[in-house]
Amino acid sequence: MIEAFATVFDGYTLELAASMLVGTACGVIGCFVVLRGMALVGDALSHSVLPGVVVAFMLAGAGPVPMFIGAMTSGIATSVLINTIQNNSRIKGDSAIGLVFTVFFAVGVILISALPRGTHFDLKCFLFGNPLAVGQSDLWMMVIVAAVVCAAVVLLFHPLRTASFDPVMAASVGINPKVAHYVVMILLAATVVASLQAVGIIMVVAMIIAPGATAYQWTDRLGTMLWLAALIGTFSTGLGFVVSFWQNWPSGPAMTLVAGGLFIFSMLFSPSYGIVAAATTRRRNKQHIAREDLLKALARMPDHVASDKQLAESTGLSRKRVVALGGKLAAKGLVDKLGDGRYRLSAAGDEFAHGLLRTHRLWESLLHETGIDPAQLHPLAERLEHAHELADVLDSRLGSPERDPHGRKIPRPEGKYADD
Image 1 (tube, rainbow, N blue to C red):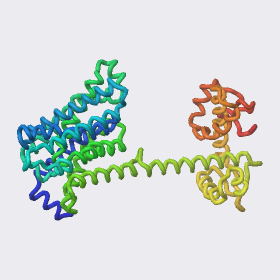
Image 2 (image 1 turned 45 degrees about the vertical axis):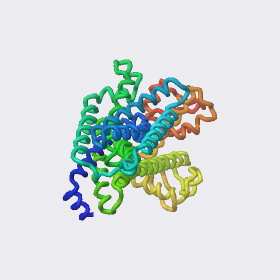
Image 3 (image 1 turned 45 degrees about the horizontal axis):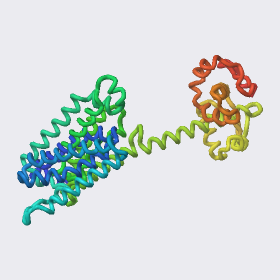
Image 4 (image 1 turned 30 degrees about the horizontal axis):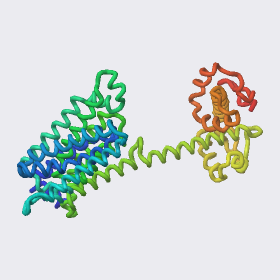
């Protein structure tokens, strides 16, 4: 790996810089692709630029500027045609996208087959990318595109954000959602075209989606998501370029593999939305509910004393689980261990259980007021009672009722747990 880094930085800094610029632009515009649900549009644009590239090659040769213009023309035509089909036929968006990009791609392949014999057009390079073929003019094109994309997003941040999250509100404050859509489409098309040399039309979709999707796992703020996606895209393409030398892999797939790996890591370990965090939260919630159910069951026993066997039968928990939870409750001072597997509710535990009962009966009262079937009041309240921090809010909302729908007294905060 160290040798691969040395090789890249010694002889391929131009190609590395070009690839990282591509990653930056893909990460920034990819945020709007992810948020607006435009992944299929990105795929369509990456394929439909082929006829424009071939026509530009036929007219002006393999120069980066003519091919960029040809590809952009084809990409914009694709966007307009997709929207025209959506707005003037019964065809839905995904069908229109699939129809347009396959037809455009087919036209491109036919144009390639019609090139004069002996003409060299490397379709494989176009499909999978070849950053080692990047020249000085290609690098400047990528610099310009990356700068334009980032500058446009910064300057149009508020209109694009509003149109992306709430088109109706955007229209009400004078922002044209269609114009915002076409701005995103043009920036996306430019990014796709600039990325073709480095990653190819097959992999560019992943490089557009993966950084934005990865950043989305870590933040709810669009501004933070944008710069984080730019960093992820830059890192993915840079590291993927080095890995391609290290393992002798094609560079485009190597970059995509790194970007995909970062997304999988984020999907697993993101503190807010990761699978591991969600599983940990569910486990903590189950523990929290089980402890409170144990306290409530103990409070209903004569003299607030019961054995682990009685508590297991009352709560449906295993005796082993009851013993484990009983130890934790004892450590918090909510129960006292009496020996022989028996537990007694402490004064603090009694107060806590009293609060659970109050919350349960307040929830039953609120559910009854909303017209819920009386037979469902108790099981629903059993699930909601653990949100006991809402007890005072419920009490105020209901006007401090004295009894629940079953006629049982609702304890006051300073009351006792009696009258169950």
